[in-house]
Every structure is written in structure tokens, then in C-alpha cells.
Amino acid sequence: MSDPREGLTVTHRRYVPYAHAHYAGNLVDGAYTLGLFGDVATEVCIRTDGDEGLFAGYSEVLFHAPVRAGDVLEVTATVARVGRRSRTLDLRAQVVCRGRPDKGASAAEVLAEPVTVVTATGTVVVPGPAA
Image (tube, rainbow, N blue to C red; front, side):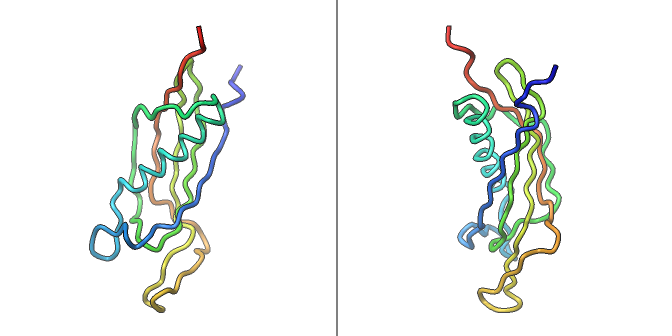
């Protein structure tokens, strides 16, 4: 029998400020998205176990496309597996809006189709039951 927490999905959205541009072309480093994965994983732990939990590690991280300052990222965590104290999460970050400096200093657009920029599988741990 599967655990009812399996399949729980939590989504956050975050604007990527220009202050986070780290490379030419307003590119943002990959660690920025991993930080967002940590935030969404924290909410998963709170919802499933009433505790912020700890991120134990990643078994896979794939960078599919660049993240740029001016993007709006949608970051989603879905509980794939529930262990005694561990939770395996499927993580996805997608660009849903993108700055368009070619059309003006503050121009931006909602993308017709989100662009997947990072996917990952991670494990979080939560405290065991009180003795």
C-alpha cells in the first residue's frame, strides 16, 4: 500500500533579480536554482511531517537550459517515495516568464510554453517519531 503523502506537490514562483546575474548575457549560476529546490523541499517537509527537515543530497541534477536575470521561475517538488525518515523528491524548475531587454529596458513576456531549465531527484530527511 502506498503512503498517502506520495504524490504531494508543492510549487513556488520566484522572480530572478538582475542582482543575481553572474555571467555574461545576464546568466545566473546553477546554485541559484538549487537554492530554490531547497525552499520548496522545506515546504514539502512541513506539509508531510510538521518539520522543516534537512536536504540530505541529490542523486541526479540535470541542467537543460540557462536561467537569466529577469526570468520568473516556477519550482515544483513532488514526493516520489516515503521512507521511515526520508522523502525522495522529484524536482523541476521552469521559466514561465522571461525578460525581453531587446524590446525595452523593462520589457518582459509570459512564455507560451514553459521552458524546463533544471530537473533533479533529491532526498530530504525528517526527525523520527518521538520516543
